[in-house]
Image 1: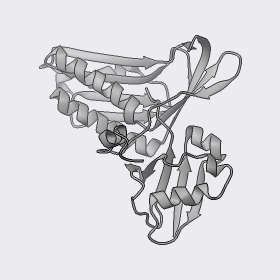
Image 2: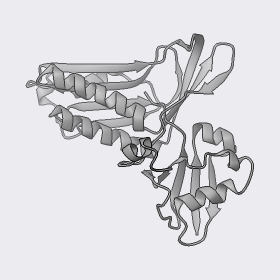
Image 3: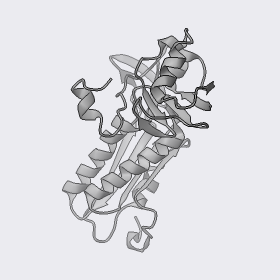
Length: 81
Length: 166
C-alpha cells in the first residue's frame, strides 16, 4: 500500500526532501514505517529512532496502524510562538 | 472596540494560521463584551537577539493543516477555562523581520484572573503542541532551527516522562 510521508523543518533538512511516497506491506504500523525508512540508509538513518509522528494530522504512537493513502508526518520538536 | 455587544459570537473561539502580517487591533476587536470587565491582548514578537548574538530575522514554518486544527483545539480549551467563548488567536508563518508580530492572542471575560489564565494557557500550549518551527537568522549570515519541545501524543506525557514509552 502507498502512504505519503512528510518532513518538516530540521527533519526536511536532514533527509533533503519535503515529501516521499512509500510502498509498505498491508498491516504495517507507524513504527514499521520508521524502521523501513531508516533502513534505506543515509540520509534517512539520521532520523531519530522514535520521532514524533502525526498520522493524518493527529499525533500517534508507533503502534498505530497504517492504511493506503495515509499522510504520515515526521515532526521535530516544536517551537511556535 | 466599537459596539462589541452587537457583534456575533458565532465564530468564537477562533484560531487561524496566516502568512500575511497580523493586525493586533483586528484580533482585539474579536473579543470584548458588555459583560466583560477584562480584555487582554498578548503579542509575541521577533526579538533581535538570541543567546547573546544579534538576530536579523526569523522564518516560521508550520504543518499548516494540522496546525490549524491544533490551534483551534487550544482556543477551545482556553475558552472552556475562561468561561466565555471570547478567545481569538492568530499565528503567522513565513519570513518575519525584527519586531514583527508572530502570534496575537485576544481574550475577554468578566474578571481579570480568568483572562490572564486563559491568555497564558494559549501561549504555553502553542509552545507545547503547535506544529510550528522557527529558523533563526543571525546577523552575519548563519541560521539555525530553534530548539523546541518534543511532541507527545495525548495521554502519553506522564508515561514518557517516567521513561515508560519509547
